[in-house]
Image 1 (tube, rainbow, N blue to C red):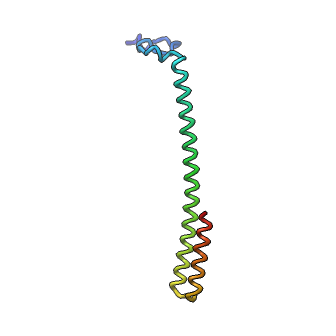
Image 2 (cartoon, helix red, strand yellow; image 1 turned 135 degrees about the vertical axis):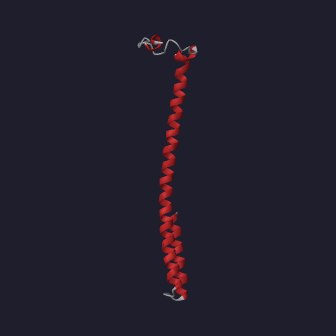
Image 3 (tube, one colour; image 1 turned 90 degrees about the vertical axis):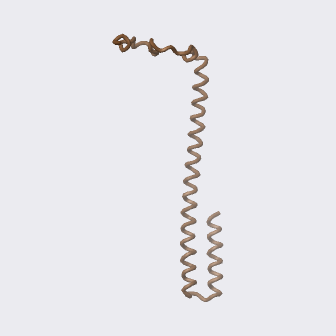
Length: 104
């Protein structure tokens, strides 16, 4: 048993394990590692792009929430009768138009 643990430390492959010959063949493994690295770079780029979309979505979400609050306050003002009916429709219409333009 001790012989197993006293393996030659210069050897990169343990003596007791039989590996297929292609594992140590650089002609086979090099292209595999290159493809593996390429796939990692693709996934990292996709992750970066997804994070950017997420940030943009969060900004749009914040803008939408802000516009929603503005319009909600405006509706409350109208319902309380602070403005006459003609001004209410005109002002609400203008606010909705402004909100739509800002969203673009």
